[in-house]
Image (tube, rainbow over all chains, first blue to last red):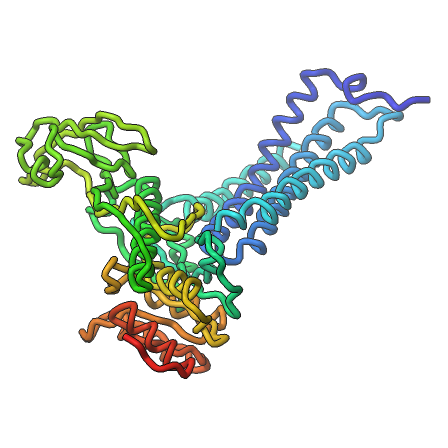
Amino acid sequence: MNNPKISEVYTLKERLLSFLSGVILGSLIGFPFIALAINLLILYIYYYYVVTFFLLFTLIAWVILIDVFYYNTLMNYKLHPGFNIKDCVLKHSLITSALILLLGGILIIFIIPNYI
Amino acid sequence: MKKMFKKARIFMIVLAIPYLFVMFLMVYRVDYRISTPGDLTDIGRYIELEADTYAQENPISSIYVMSVPRPTFFQLIVSTLSPSHTQTMISPQQREISDSANFRSGQVARNTSIDASFIASLEALDMEIEYERQQIVRLIYNYTVGDIEIGDIVLSVNGNTNIQEGLNEVECEEEATLEVDRDGEIKTVTVLRQERDGQCVFGISLSTYYNITHAEIPLEARTSLVGGPSGGLMQTLYIYNALSEFDFTSGLKITGTGTINIDGSIGSVGSIREKVFTAHNKNADVFFVPKSGSSNDNYSVAINALEEIPSSSLEIVGVSDFVDALNWLMAYHGEDVDE
C-alpha cells in the first residue's frame, strides 16, 4: 500500500496555517542566533570560513525548527496511520540542510575568496 | 487548560523583555567605526605585468584592515574586549557619506594608487612610460545635487578644461555643466553649487588621476573588494622587484603600508595599529611604514603598537620614500646601495 501524500491527508488551509505557525515560531527562536551569526561575521570577517559556517548551521537550524513546528502543528489537526510525519520532518530537513550547505559551501570556498 | 495558557502567557511576556533587548543590541546601529585586523594580500594576485618576471621566493604583500562602519551595539561591545580592535566615533562630516560612496571612493583611490605605483617604479627603472594628469571624482556626499558619479573623469567644466578654475567660476545656487568620461563614454552631467554652513560647495571631491597612454610594459590590475590608496608603497616595490634584474626580497616575508606619489615619496595612512597586529598575526618579517619625523607619525604609532606584542619578531622599518625601502632591502641582501 502506498503511503498517502501530505496533500491527500491535510487540506491546503491546514497546511498553510501550519506553515505560518512554523515560520513564526521557528523564526522567533532562530532570529537571535541568525542575528548573532551575522554580527560576528561582520566583526570577524577575517575568520569568515569559521563564522560563515556558523551562519550556515544557524540557517539550517532555523529551517529545521520551522519544519518541526510546521509538522507539529499539522499533527494537532489529525493523525493518519499511513502517514509518517516524523519521516517527513527528517526528509525535508535533510534535503533543505544539504541544499543550504551545498550553496553556502560553493559561496565560501569558490566565490568569496576571489573578491578578497 | 486555561490556567496553563495563562501561565505560558506570563512566561512569554517575561521572556519577551530580554528577547527584545538582545535583538535591539544586535540590530541597532551606532555612529562608530570599528577597525579590525585584516590580512596580507600577495600583490601578484591583483597586479599582472605582461613581462618575463621570475617567481619571487616570498611574495611582497600589501596589507589591509577591516572596517565596520556603523556597527551594532553588540559589535561595539564585543570589539571593546579585543585589544586589536579600535573604535572611533563617526564625525558629522563622515555621516554625510553613504557606505556605498565610501566603498566606491576606496576603489577609485586603489586604482589611482596602482597607476601611481606603476609610474613611480617604471621611472625608477628608467623604462618608458607616458601619462597625463586628469581629475577624477573621488567622493560625493549625501547632499550632492546632480547626476555626477564617483569615478567620473572630469574633462571640462562649463567648457573650461582648467577644472579648478571652471568650478571656481560657478556662482552659488547655480548648476555647473561637466563633460565627463564615464567608463570610456563621454557624458554631460550637472552638479549644483549650493550654500551649506555658510559656504558654497558642490559636494564633490576631486583627486588626481593618471591616464597612462603608453608604457614599455603593459600592466593589468584585477578588481578586488579591498579599497584605498595605502598599498601604494608595496605595489611600487613589487613592480620594481618584478622588473629588476634580481629578486632582492632575500626570502623575507615583506609587507608594509603607505601611499605613493609618482615621484616616489610616501604619504601617511590610517589604521596603523591594526596593520601591525595583522603583520604580526601573519608572521611577516618586515613591515615598512611611513616616517615623517614627528612624534605621532605612522612610524611612532607602529612602534607603540608593537610594544603591545612583546613576543613579536616583526621588524618595523620607517621610510620616507620608496628609495628608502629599496635601500633597506638591498642592504639586507648585501648589495651596494645605489641611489
